[in-house]
Length: 373
Image (cartoon, rainbow, N blue to C red):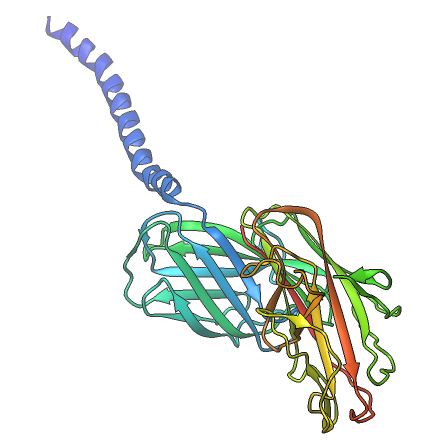
């Protein structure tokens, strides 16, 4: 009897040991993998995300990058990482010529007091001094200054944004936003996701803009050659701005002059037209009698009748309306939805009178297109 019992014990014991080992392995794997599954379940994708740059010229210094996004998941944000890459996903390669190590953190909204680290080129890490719970749907914006643009023109670049806890565990992201450096003559594009987004500028050398006859025939996509201006004879040039984007919130194109007054030759200048973007006015000849004081004028118009504010202010009854080209960005084209090859015609007008001093007047106009997803 005792012999049979010993045999049974020897046969059963190894089975019990194997079952116990399997149970322990399963429990250990569960402990190791559960945080990973939990982290993935909590991570979200930021919404209404975009990055807006202030200057599009390749390799230009002193650029400001403004990031804006809305949280998708409630969490205690301890850090926000901004990673500049040449691709929207996969291995991240820092864009050639980009310099973020000299960056300066400026305005931050939606988060409490914070500091940013710029030690690794292409990576900016914002750290919240006292992390607190941030609810989903919170709008956050971060402004960084003294950034140097990439040096390769006509190229789209990407920034991956990730919010994390102090653990660190990902809360939202990475969410990819995009911007494009077009040419060294300052046409800039900003976008916010892997873009089905294009922005092109084409010269218009005939026809009309808002009923005004286009007379400058040498216009190119990157220049407005008014050539010799004749007293009390207005000259009009034009460009067609074409946008295609799947941005669900639409896009806007802004226009600004690099300086104010917009055109200058040494101590002499041609002033901006007296109408404003908010209240454009019908063009009339400059009436100044002292050189460089309203003796020469430069302005713009747009045929977009759906602008925010007073929608048809440039295209309403009473003749074509014009605004002065300011050194601050003003809206020239606008949509609240995604568009396919939407064309907006922008006109440029210059005129002098007999009191304007002779000279070679030059200036720079900057267009910035920003889609919002």
